[in-house]
Length: 124
Image (cartoon, rainbow, N blue to C red):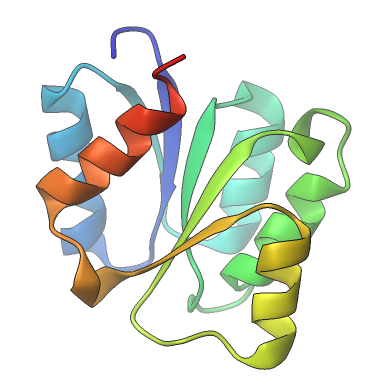
């Protein structure tokens, strides 16, 4: 997956580093963000091809970040995978479905499985 740029957004530093290391070892170029405000700025400046986005973060949560990104012309079509430890509430799930986001429960997927899911986005 050389030259494929992804943005990983998670406030859990150990998970952020583990995800970043795994995706780099698979040939991805990786940007990192530890909070929502920074994630929006990085995404709109760097235009990654895919965003892995945690929902629960201090300050701007993942759904708010996704909404801000989707309001941008570039952001309307970027691939976003929402990662969380919790099932989304009805409002969040409505937004996820309406905006063509993929939702993955962190505890239900291994790092290797997550890499395979991401690679599917670039398989065409």
